[in-house]
Structure formats: structure tokens, C-alpha cells
Length: 323
Ligand code: PB1
Image 1: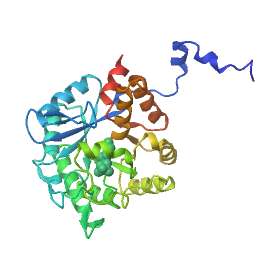
Image 2: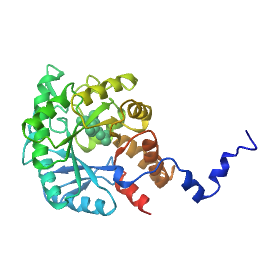
Image 3: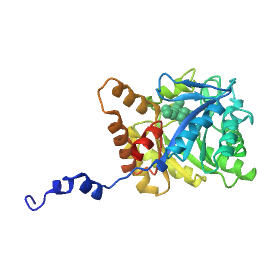
């Protein structure tokens, strides 16, 4: 009881605060999401996500080299196809932008972890994450296509494939496809608890992946549901996921904590495009201190239980952590 107990004693000096700090961030916990498209010499800024770009594979190598010098050890690749069709067939084309970039990056940087996003929405003409028939996204016919995309990424050299589609049974289908292709050493990071979030807006602009009709509520989770996240994570782990993810992050820190406490497996949280762009916009208007807000955001996600944080702030945070 006061005055015997004085918590402020442990906050008196920077050194004392460092001594008792409970949560630390390290650049090696961060995954840097990147967008790659066909071409040469391309580095085109994404208006809704300032400081993020569409790269051609050659310029992507430059960007990743700089990020690694700042301490980043893992990247996540999203592809923008040259052509779209109802099935999203460029998702599994060996000469597509992602597959090309994976080969180039693994050749250039032996100690880089390359993660690929496995989904169809960037590649389908209708923008949904699966096969569409009569206005409905069909679950089971989509599984084989996702497995083909994952295998093509793994054959190009991806260390981890990350299915973000939210189809039921996709982890088992991808694990089976990888093992049948003798790619049993490739890991699966499942977007296990992924919510139908408004915070994906800037990404859909960046990846040109907004659904042309309807929305994703029939396959992504209801933001109102927490228990359901434990069901989804349990199923994906049973199907062979090596790591799981909660997405988005900041509005779902309760889910991050629940999943970490319930399963104790490597857990990622995705600090998504809307979270990124909101912070950047407020900082640009002088409403918040950008550097402090970035570190506070990522520390909060880490404190909630995330071992791995996917964030567009990765390079900036790595530079700040390096200071
Ligand atoms: O940063 C982001 O907003 C990521 C968006 C995310 C990428 N995996 C999905 C958003 C969406 O539902 O459009 C893409 C789904 N495959």
C-alpha cells in the first residue's frame, strides 16, 4: 500500500525503465510484405499506402537488400498478374511475377526467409478468393487450385506458403499437395483467424483485388466472433499448419492473446494495410508522432502474444530499433 508501494520508483530513469521492460521488439520478429509484378525497372508507389511500391523483380532485389541491411530477415510476397481469369490461373504459373521473384530472391539472399501469400483474389477476374459459380464462392473446387499455387511457390523456392483465402480444408489440401510433390520441408503459415475487415481497403487498392460483386463475409470471419477463432486455429493445426495467424492485428489483440494462451504455437499477427495507412495519414496531418506510434503499435501486438508481426512498417521499425 502507498506509501510503502510506489510503482513510479521503477519508472524514474530510462535505465530503470529498460531494466524492468516486459516486452521487447526485434527486427527479426518482423515480416515485410511486398508487391511484385512483371516488368523491369519498375518501382511504382502505391497511393493508398505511402512508402510501399509495386516492384518488378529486379527492383525488388534492391529493396530486399536494403531491408536486410536494416535487420529484416523475412518478406511476404503478393503478386500482380499480367492477366486475370475466372480461375485465377496465373496464381500457379511458373513464370508469374511471384514465382520469378522467389527464384531471384533465393538466389541472391541465402539467409532470407521468403513467404508467399497463397490466394486467388489477386488473380481472378471477379476478385474473390475462390472459384465462383452462380454468385457463390465454391469451397471444395477451390482447394485444388490453392494447392497448385502453393506447390508452384514452393517449387520456386519459397520457405513458407501462407494461405489467406479462408476456404475450409485448404491447409490439408496444401499440405497434401506439397508432400506429394516431395516438398515436405516447406512450412505452412495459415491465416487461420482472418476477419472480414474494413481494414483491408488500401491493400485491395494496391493489389487490385477488391471483389467485383458482394463481399468476403461468406468466407472470412465475423468481427464479432472470438470463440470461432479458436475453432479455426485448431482445425488448421490439425490439418498441418506449422504456424498460424490472426488478421488484422490491432483491432483483434484479444484474439491474439486468446490464441497464444490456448495453443502455444508460433503465432503471427498481420498489421494490415488499413492500420498502416491510418497511422501514416494521421502522422502526415501532424496529429500523432509517427515514430512513437509505429513502435507502440508493434510493441502492443507483441505484448498481446504475437511471435511474428507482418507489417508495412517493417523497414521503418527496423531502423528505429537499430538506433
Ligand atoms: O494488408 C492487408 O490489408 C492484407 C489484405 C489481405 C492479404 N492477405 C487480404 C485482404 C482481402 O480480403 O482482400 C487478401 C485476401 N486474400
